Length: 97
Image (cartoon, rainbow, N blue to C red; front, side):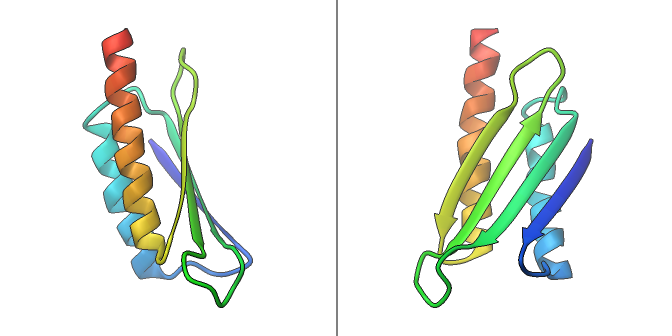
C-alpha cells in the first residue's frame, strides 16, 4: 500500500506526515484490499477557526474508491474524523459484500 500526501500551498511537517501514516495504517486492519491512499491537506480561509481541511481517498481494486473529507481546527483532528468516517464505510462495504 502506498500513501501519497499532498499539502496544497504549504509544506506538511515530518511530524504531521508520521501522524497521517500511523492513522492510515490502521485502516488496513479493516480491509487488506486497500491498494493506494491519497491524503489531501488544505488550509481554507486563513485566520479563522475550523480552517484545516483533510481529504482521504482509498483506492481498492474491483471496488469503488472510498472518500472522506472533514474540516477541523487542526489537521490531526480532521485526519481523525476522516479515518473514523472511512472505518464506517469499510465496515458497511464488508457487510454489503
